[in-house]
Amino acid sequence: PLLLDQRFLAGLGNIYTDEALHRARLHPLQMACRVSGKKARELHRAILAVLGEAIAAGGSSISDYVDGAGRSGAYQSAHRVYGREGQPCPDCGTPIRRIVVAQRGTWLCPRCQRAAGGRVNTGR
Image (cartoon, rainbow, N blue to C red; front, top):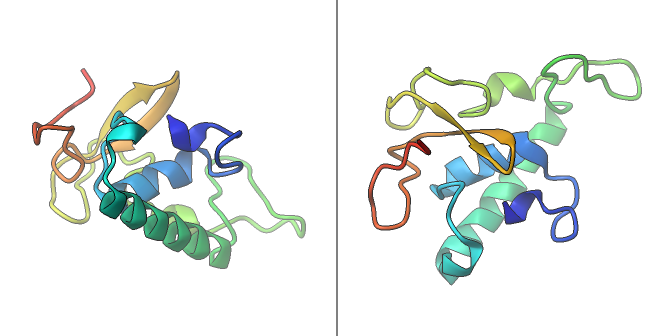
């Protein structure tokens, strides 16, 4: 859970971490030291894209989030994996799965985000 470590990267949070990992096709349990330079650059681009889109949409209003002007965010309608357990992956159609990583709910596509070695890792 390096991306959730506030000492490493402050403010990314569960939602945007899940979304960026999905775009970069990285499994949430992938060890950071085993990510190639190419994959790290893909992840960096995915983080920038997700954050840019989320900011443009006013953030994600999952329960009661509102901005300083009292407006709800709209990015939750663009989530590809976060909170979509059982729904089809927008890229391949495989049902989205929820696993627990560092005591947090984490959503992923077990086909697009295969674990190291290429096997489908459901987190179970």
